[in-house]
Image (cartoon, rainbow, N blue to C red; front, side, top):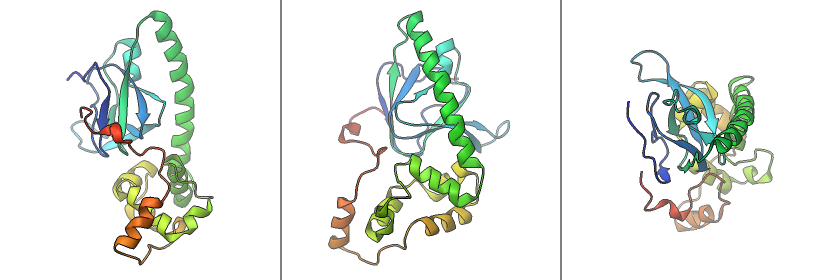
Length: 211
């Protein structure tokens, strides 16, 4: 068991692990990014099974509301920042507990959509959670699709979220996004920089925050 830093916001790169199941720490709120809450697949296993996703504005480390160790581990699906939440009074705890109950219902619906149905539909839902609307015309433009592909987590991490093989997810992405642009060099880089940012991308204040 270890104790997670208590006093200030913490920034994480994609695939970083803020804490493991059994660690102790405060209640957190996701400032930006997406965080996976998971548990080991077996005793001593290095593999983890996704339980829920936490999106910007969500509370994580809910066990802290009951002064308990974290029962689920956490990993950053995208660059993320967590802000500690002050549990200053019993009234504050009760208000946050109400938020947590409603949040758990929403995120359970997300997991159901990510884990059931045809894989392309699951991948499309995940793209929307990541800030990429598969119904928008922007996905029909190759250079914007290049930027989206570059911003996505690694293929194996996407596959883990939607509970599918990496090859199947790769085929689904090929159906949802146009082929990669053949343009290269400075001109293409300029176009990629002009592509719209996605909501979970880390702002410039990421630099200097403790990790």
